[in-house]
Length: 405
Image 1 (cartoon, rainbow, N blue to C red):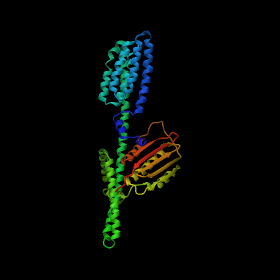
Image 2: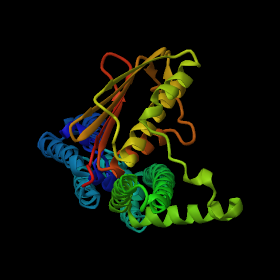
Image 3: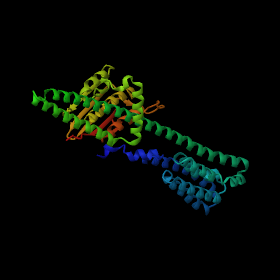
């Protein structure tokens, strides 16, 4: 089951705090440690040839810096202090190594700290890194001082630029999630409104025939009971899944639409049910009209599914097909599988195209995956998406089915 949970809320919370994933942190460590060993390590070996006794100590200090970089994403302030002190020690042992080079690991850590921590913390760290300016001036004059201050300022500025990029990406993701939740809320509202409208008609019919045809009235009452249970299930699912900020944003969106709609948005068209898996063939036909081969495979009965789950499955297939048309280079075939097995619905969409790996992302890129994951999460399910080893792209969702009782 772990493979269905590759997008946990904990990981999303970590990204919101500016933390890196384990893979990114490991790659950053290898890259920065390699840079320090290549540049500073080489300088120490060259400068230490004339100081045989000091060389082993200097080499050990360089290794300490490289190892300390392993924790620069978790505790950048502590790592910055360690790297600054060891760098100053290397420079004191081997004055032939420039102060800028001796503090290279500290500058790398300053860049990471500037990107991942609040500005007030990074500004203090920048000020602390400027404290060795007098020794830099004493050792290298004005040129040495200028080089040192420039490298420190560039490291801090690069971190600020990277942090701003991450903040924009997180804001875009949050905006996409809120917009998707608002759309889901409107669609579930339409489903429940349709169910209640049918219940009103059935109640009126039961009242008309209650005395003359009691059996027909009982059938209408049983249909009303079933509809009421279904509507309560949809509302319970929506209230359990939505977060307060999403509810507020959705309410504001609905108020804006109600003000813009003539008649207050209470027309019959507002109460019609949303799309469902019953319309999957029509969706596939629209994609086939573009020249794409679409193969649809169904397993198990799709009738009687909760409306929110049915709608989520349909929207996931729809968005996955749209992504194939927009982003899968060279794709000419896509396979759709919808399996209703026991207490869950499994949706899989696989194409045979090539996913674009390079080039600047267009505005809003990635919103489709964000929306699909949010739809799966809001019904208590999960979704994974990514390229396949043999080529192509796969979207797989697992949606639990809660039977009303």
